[in-house]
Length: 298
Image 1 (cartoon, rainbow, N blue to C red):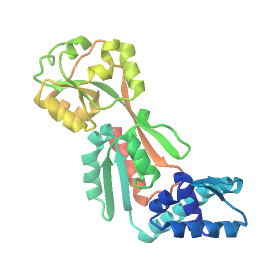
Image 2 (cartoon, helix red, strand yellow):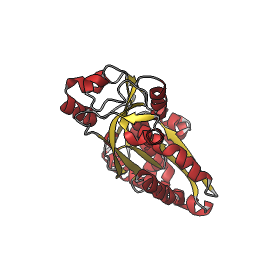
Image 3 (cartoon, rainbow, N blue to C red):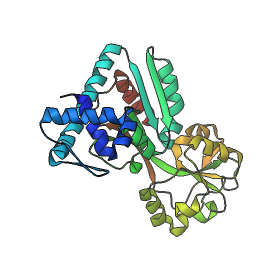
């Protein structure tokens, strides 16, 4: 039985159309039709009923598709493992970083990778939902993202990495920076900059401070780039809301300060390491794991 025939059947099952499946596979419809016919000849039965313009899996086809997903995945991992052994060395990795992890890890990771001979690292940013798709399509080897933004799945390994205190941060000469006690009403007199928040964190804010803390109303400057937010805060009276650790260098040199909100914000940022279940890791991923634990637990 040819693995390619199983891959072609899966594409057909996922798209429901010979034309769309052929386009996805970069082959002609006639070649796809011949592949399905060859599979049916090997199995000794029909996997597909062609009813008018519709294509429906037969009972045999449904069983084959369920089994084929595991077979095709394992075959892909076998090829991946063989390539890693052939390449040797640390190899290349591609990782996705969420907004918080990117602010903390991007520059240190690139610097660390530059010091490792034979190591190649590609880092991407974007919405968690898009990165999950890239992970599942094997464009990414791993992700480090907000754990609350990841929907658990049987094909995902989700490992908790660290939980960081969240808070409000301003430039050192902000009108609120010298106040010993600040209320949320004081904060809301100014623009608030924040990344998109999970529903869980949004509920925690409302539970603690009331409806005025609803991020949909409270946040006036929203983007995924925390460094851009902090640069904005450094030049204006905007207030940053997020993981305090992202501003640690500016807090250390005194150019920014954490506001003393009463009561103190109870929300945290929880980062997770996400990989595809059953996938063989490149040798470089062991180094990446060590790097994560060293930098996120400083």
